[in-house]
Amino acid sequence: MLIKKPAEISSSEITPAHIYHERRRFLRDAIAAGIIGAVPGLTPAEAAVLPSSGKLAGVRKGSVTIVDKVTSYKDVTTYNNFYEFGTDKSDPASNARGFRTRPWTIAVEGACRRPAVYQLEDFVRPYALEERIYRMRCVEAWSMVIPWVGFPLAEVLKRAEPTSRAKFVEFTTLHDPEQMPGQRPGLLGTGLDWPYVEGLRLDEAMHPLTILAVGVFGEVLPNQNGAPLRLVVPWKYGFKGIKSIVRIRLVERQPLSSWMQAALHEYGFYANVNPRVDHPRWSQARERRIGEDGLFSAKRETLMFNGYAEQVASLYTGMDLRKYY
Amino acid sequence: MVPRDWIGGVLKPLVFVVSLVPFAWIVWRAFANDLGTNPIETLNRYTGDWTLRFLLITLAVTPLRRISGWHWLIRLRRMLGLFAFFYACVHFLTYALLDQYFNLPEILKDIAKRPYITVGFASLLLLIPLALTSTNAMVRRLGGRRWQRLHRLVYLISVGGVVHFLWLVKSDIREPALYALILAGLLGYRLWWELRGATRAAGGQA
Image (tube, rainbow over all chains, first blue to last red; front, side, top):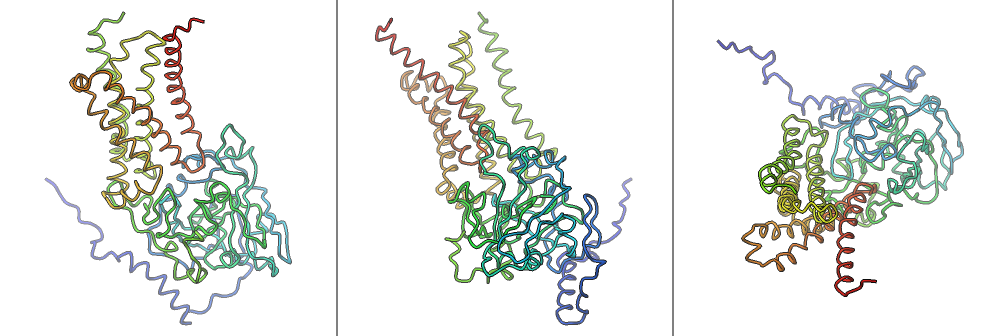
């Protein structure tokens, strides 16, 4: 005889996800309305302590969030484009295993009044770590939803006190062919000039959505995800999110990024997610959400500025986004 | 010399089954939910790889036959060529049905706008007349010379296939370059053979 065990929770009792996620919006609105007191200033206890692995302590839940389902830890940490460790998506997870992220120094330099070279721990210490759940849209028309842990890049830049000559920010990845097999000169190589370079306009870099990440899923960033420090700019294609950063330089002229140098007609400086402007080899109108859109489902529509238009569209007022792709 | 029935009765069925192994393997992985993080990309890349491999294997038959003297190899060529066509069709279906989800306007736009898809699709179209004229009856109907001339399209198709792969990759061209190198060897051998034949025919005994 078949005895059917009743479900412990009937489906009618489960809060629909979109309402469940509304709690964050409620909190945000409540803060804005002054119902909940303003977030107190940064106390020394909140200062970030960065271990070399494991859980990150004192991570604040972010004020910016989305209703999308978070991609699985396994997918986020095994499907990576990090050409320094190989061009297959699974290469970084295996080849970056022994990558040394300590000691690590970060130079903040260029057109600023307070240039400095920091040890990683000192660099991170002044900032409160915050979780930011962002959509990540790759230029190859797939996407994920990733719970980053980091702090706004703006705070780093303010601390450096940019001069009036600073118009752009240029980022550089570590150059260490011994540790990064993809950087070794070969017969044909991987087609990029090393080290990897990326850039942002100063106002993009100062935007509150732009963060430097040191973790994912509440833990220290795995090496394959760009440890120990990477850039996350959620309204741009993933390749703008430069990994394993060693230099942040304030500059007067627009930097030449690695992908621009490799193929200027394919990769522009801005690289804003834009369903109306195709990459020569991929339509950007739709995307496949990793882990959700299965074998037999259509791709989902890509959103303008990856869904962050409300926050960032004003940065590009009057610009021809077809020309400045 | 290998006995005739050994080829028809044993070797051919064996090669047939072996040629199906890559297909069976990927179907198995699909049902075992073992296609990795981006299953459609995995299927698409895998079937594309096997299409190119079968094209190159088919093109290797003639040089191998001439070098080794194993003339019975020719009896496997048609089947290997048809497997190239089979994998090309599956490759296209993974793109059209799974990746684009029957979105015909989107597929047509891709074919028109993206050079690597244009070349790949053209190569697939060119394979169709070769598959259709692969039967003995069609060889007889066309006559050996015309049939052979038509089937030399496979050189163009293979170049198209390799270019399709080359134009797909973002920056690391090592893998398509390897296919290009092998193809160049196989086509270069034919060119060398033709030139040598021409010199001989001209009585160049120097």
